[in-house]
Length: 321
Picture (tube, rainbow, N blue to C red):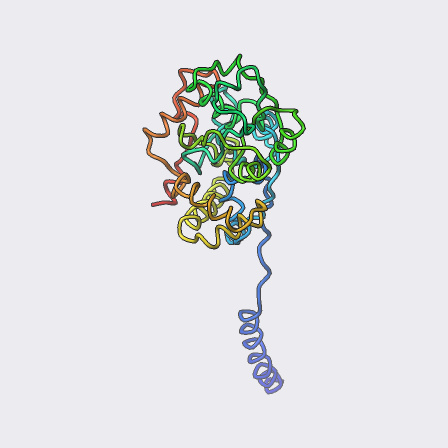
């Protein structure tokens, strides 16, 4: 009896060891990815870092499965505040939402200057000629309309009364100008370059007119409080993408050509125009942020709100250290 047990033990022990070794060598089941819905205003150079993070696998490396959802500014604010979307890439509208008391915060800054221009018909020689005309914007009180107000005011027009704003989705504004539905439009660089080929012209490059924080990462306060690890992983992915933009021009332009439907020449030109308008690590100097945000909120009719109350960079600062 004892000899049988001894032989059994001698036979089974090596098998158990082999099984243990094989279990270490065989691929283990991957952890389920966090599925996230992230809203934005549509494919544009402003939101390029998020698409780079998606295409180059930076989100997946952080165990995230990100779906980009196109929304308008008004819908975006309500969706983020209610938790119907997990995050938004719209920094401008999120600042407005937070300043109005909605439970949202900005946790990363992606841009320092706008990535669009004022596109007009070829016969228009100055901004003042737009008085009484219509202008296309992607959403009311979004970053592009606020940018338009900056430009109109700089050229002596009343931005509230002298221009009629019409909400026209990204990608459809050239057709709207061709049909005469709108007389002018704010367009991101990609759309503006295509408009130029269609016979229109970019009268003002908004980046030359003013600074603006348009792209970034906004989140509901409840998610920020209850899921800080997930927020940190989204931040890490976007910071990696921002660094990729600076360090990999060729790879960045390949994503631009595919995502924004640009030819190589247009992608190269837009990259050179846009590269230095992104933040390097999701942060800007506090004084710069305060100045830009205060001016932006003033255009939205909001005053006496401290920008520091609208942001929470604690997780990002920990990660950068």
